[in-house]
Image 1 (cartoon, rainbow, N blue to C red):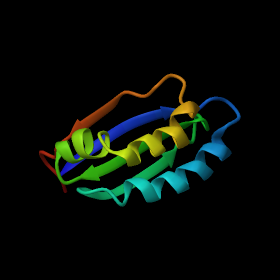
Image 2: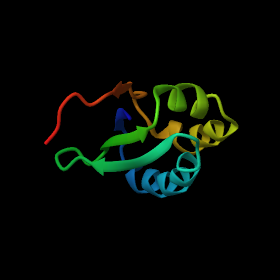
Image 3: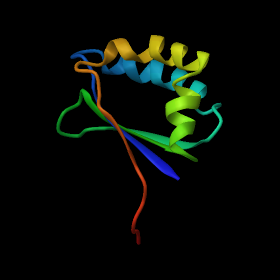
Length: 98
């Protein structure tokens, strides 16, 4: 399992619209091969900041499968114009847990 991590900084005053479009975009990503689950959390201290965590079966399911798909273009259209700056996306694998 691979965990995708992205800190999303949303342009001021656009959080509600972003959340509405994210609900639409969630249906796109959840239909992709290798998708396991996701969570989107809003920061309590900075209301325009979000943490996106997406679990994938493999790194390639995200980087090649999803990002190389026509569905990703729809995802981009729905969400990417809200980001300022554009987020850094990183991938993690678990090494320990409780």
